[in-house]
Amino acid sequence: MESSLTVKAESRRWMLEDIVTQPGEIAENSFVVNVRSPYISDMDSIIRKPREYDYLNWDKKLTLEFTGVNPSVYGLKIIHQDDITTIFLAGNSTVVDQEYEPYASWGQMITRYFDQNVVIANYAESGESLSSFKSAGRLKKILSEMSSGDYLFIEFGHNDQKESGEGIGPWTSFTDLLNEFIEETQNVGGNPVLVTPMHRRVFDESGSVVATHDEYPDAMRVVAKTTNVPLIDLNLKSKSVYEAWGPHESKRAFVHYPAGTFPGQNNDLRDNTHFNNYGAWIMALCIIKGMRESTPLLAEFLAADAPMIDTSAPFPFSNWTMPHSFRTTAEKPDGN
Image 1: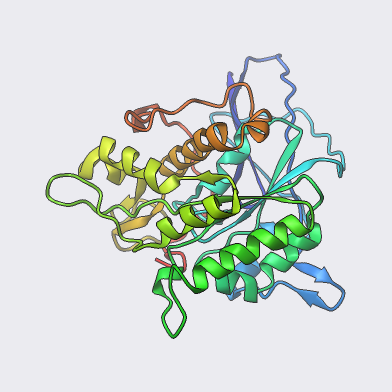
Image 2: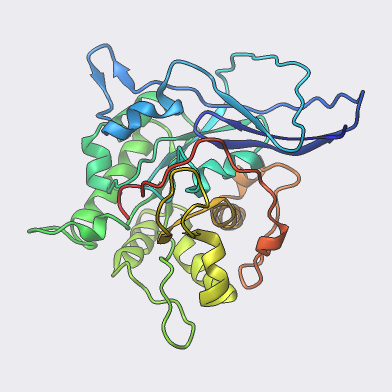
């Protein structure tokens, strides 16, 4: 029987796509997985949220998931590799390796599209802002692991806009922290890249996307310009994608499912912030488009088959065939 194999690693990071083999045929494929622990030193570690203790990313194992139609594996060879360029990700629930279906993010989809000279280390976590990411020790952990020539992609705004108090805002605390993240990254020889937050799924009566992030995307654009740091404008790209989809078709990219679609899901899911696998894939392709525009040297490490997306005519949902993972939840991520 023909085999179709999709491979995910750790917390559902997409590694191999639809590898088709016939009976008696062997296909050899390779990919690179970042494995890590929450520890910064013997006396220090990331302050994890309670839900993180069940994450496959944080256990002391390498977990591989094999799905597809009659998925078949002949053998595995695991090799330790240190000398490799790392792209670190700092962000919130729209970036994190979502542990459970039906939620997904671009951070766990983009892993599919790099060659073996680059690995993704996704330290994003649901509900985080720049300030909480820093206070939890996540930036400190990244800096402790970073080598000269590595990259840090920084995408925030969704939760930062919910913070209030004296000195809190896009042009004050948010701008100051962005500059701090940039400076700290450059101090250890890293290359910071700013990513504006994608839009939420909110439309006006004319079918245009409604901006819901206040001036936070603009603040990121200004910081990128004043510091001469590359910017991937996911805010602008997602607007183009959503409006191409329209109010109805865009539901297919978000977590909108009737009750009973997944085990233990007793109520309808209607989430206009978080993506399913298809929507996360489209956002990952927008990031790749931004890399080709803003970080061309890094884009040289993209896989040969990394798609070129037209944000005014995104790939349709009917083309999407990724099998669901086994682990599911009806609980919404933090920051919803």
